[in-house]
Amino acid sequence: MNTFKTTMLLALLTVLLVFAGGAIGGQSGMLIALLMAGVMNFVSYWFSDRIVLAMYGAKEVTEAESPEFYGIVRQLAERAGLPMPRVYVIPSDTPNAFATGRNPKHAAVAATSGIMRILSREELMGVMAHELAHVKHRDILISTIAATVAGAITYLAHMAQWAAIFGGGRDRDDEGGGMLGMLVMAIVAPLAALLIQMAISRSREYVADTGGAEISGNPLYLAGALKKLEIANQRLPMEQATPATAHMFIVNPLTGGGLKSLFSTHPPIEERVRRLEAMIYGPRG
Image (cartoon, rainbow, N blue to C red; front, side, top):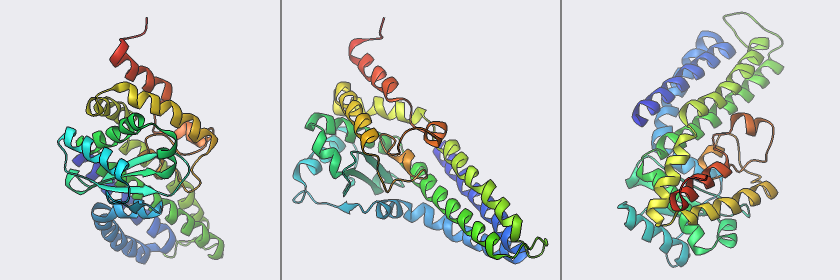
């Protein structure tokens, strides 16, 4: 199923880029956009994980550099029957984490320096087990590509805006630009958000929560972590986080309200905690 989603995602990217290229530059713009789409499809599949990690300034660490964190990931990977992923630390006070990579053999997990300061060892185990569950379920490729695609489309929308500003109001079909460029910006930006919603469903977080609880051995580890992370991210949202990549994190790194509530790919924390606690205590009466 994820292979089909990935194929559809790349196909939609191609269509959107070609459409935008035609709107801005006519037939020649369509040709250029088609060539761009081919390059981006290749880059998204093979290098999207590196792009996302670079966006957040993530630094790969060794066991000698971060023995406790690295040791937790190694212990959990062994329990899950997974190859040891690359381990990264993001220099951010906002506590959060995500996994990326195109498959379990080429996976990476990243956590902020802030998350290591506020969580206990058991809670950090719960978080990283959740991320390794994403790896085990092979849904990290579609997540990472969605982030790269949405970011590229948003950038293209900004280009269309500048094209409209400096296009002198041209509207001829063979030239594109002008008000048509503004129309592209108005259409493509919402489609970028919609694209993420199509590719990433809230259900994957529930499945990863359950899988992470099984890997860590105690659902309450993750439940306790989620409670702390929700409060901390409301007080200190991640400044460098973007809507294009927010879905990758274990909790939404963006501030509350507005578009976050409308387009959030994360289920409510209280519902996630309820389901985790039910694994221990049973359904609430």
